[in-house]
Image (tube, rainbow, N blue to C red; front, side, top):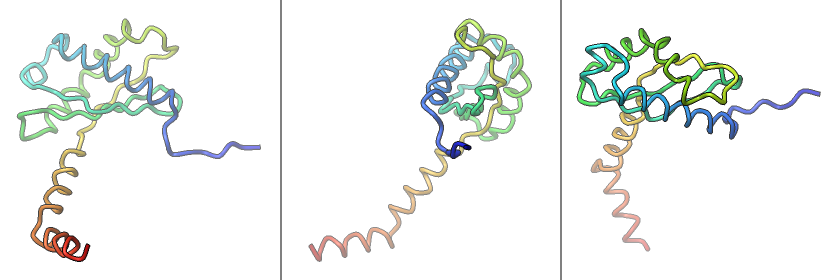
Length: 134
């Protein structure tokens, strides 16, 4: 009998993802990666999603104060193997050290777009009409 597959991450995937995020943050804060682009940029790691087998970690990052995020994302992916080696001391409990992939986090853009929609005159007009009826 096969088990039903779920698209939701398991508790273990979420816990390991948070541990990897904390370890990545420490590596970047200490300035262990010697790259001019990475050293000159403040990088926010909002989330790390783990694959079901815990061998791939996809880190969603936002470079702050940089207009072109792709340059920073490319630099991080160039140094992904070095960063993976630096994660070892913080992630000793793992059987396999996950391969780290960096992706641009677009969730802040989505939140901004939703906020702009909610503040638009059409939506505020509709909301004001609802308050009058109650």
